[in-house]
Image 1 (cartoon, rainbow, N blue to C red):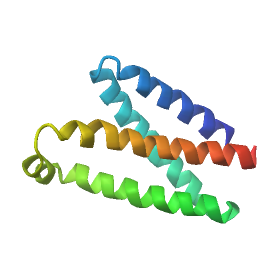
Image 2: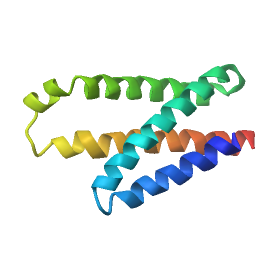
Image 3: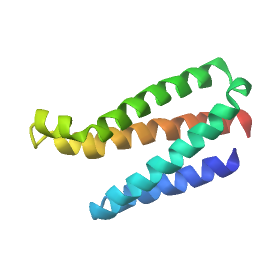
Image 4: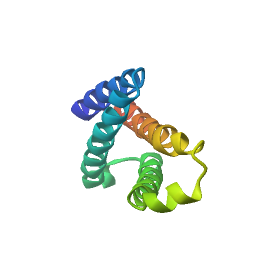
Length: 114
């Protein structure tokens, strides 16, 4: 758990730092998303060991991340349906919010497990 906690926090901080130059931030967001999905799968393997509250958080994260990935892979629909001023919300703010929620889950796990 400590490994997941530290790696997630480091990559999350690098992503926030990367957004000072936009392009590195977008790249780091992609890296962060892949890392968090791998960690999510690892946490699902230990799902029964967690409290009901953490299990509920993991269910919510899984649903939101799945919906986000579905919208990402069906990007043509979003690009044609949305105004261009809303695209940064869907490409930066929402994924960063999802990453922040996963970081919150990891912090809660770190408090209870470590």
